Image (cartoon, rainbow, N blue to C red; front, side, top):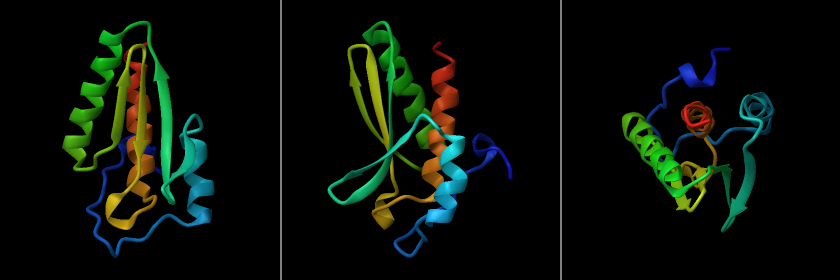
Length: 115
């Protein structure tokens, strides 16, 4: 299987399939630092990155935003002093899609630029 960071997001609509438990078992080890959390009954991938200052946290937020625009898939981003919490889920299906794992992996790659 191709590395998630090398994959592109596919267009999703309300009929797109959510990832199965088997797919989660295959994909989750590729983004081991991400947690699957449930917010308002909707599963999401979530991770918090820590930084020494606000400027670096904001820089990560902007770079993730640029990647989201390129892929047409957008996260929730909470930027605070010294940290950024990123949450990926697919709004159209109110759950997790392969796109979310792709973007989590790409987010890890972007964050690695700041360490």
